Length: 245
Image (cartoon, rainbow, N blue to C red; front, side, top):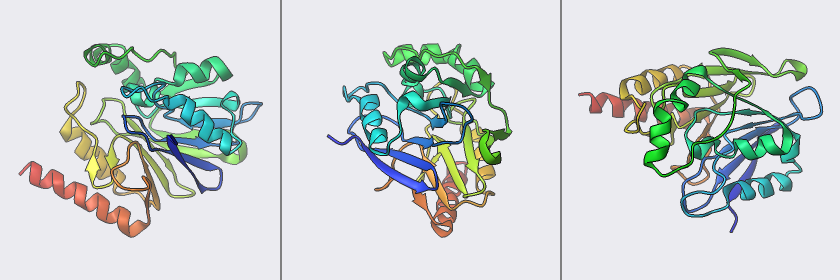
């Protein structure tokens, strides 16, 4: 079975859209943006094996190889948040490439406290990794030719969730904050609907041509075009308005 649909979205950004039956996240890879021998950055590498026993990471590695991207050449892992379906495979990449790992401090604090109980409740082994540094709100300079991603702290689905905005190409990577006509769930420990609304209101102010959500709620996965993205934000914001009534 083909677990991922590979999309070279723009320039050196590759998206791996999950196609399996069980739960797993979409993954993004920026190629050749770091100095040194391991120039690639991966965002949310996902599960190793999911609840349906699908070999998620093996499928991701195969899909990346089709684009001539090697796991061994990954120098940095960025996690939008610490739920296992987004970061369980960190440990395999670190073993293979020695990549650094980062997420927000707020999310790492959650991972090591409330998150432990969350993983146990779902019968999932807690993801094993040690962040080398924390990403903060603002620009993250990634090295070559002034390449930057803007980090936006967007709590709600999880206390330290972040979204990543590539302003030059108007790409927004949203993790589990917002999907197509839907939002990330807030009924897990650490979720907060009021915070999620504030986070989405902030994102709606950005100039965006592409949204890469953490999960698919429409065929194709990626939300494209300013008009559709504007309508998507409006629909989601209307949901909050009705829901709070």
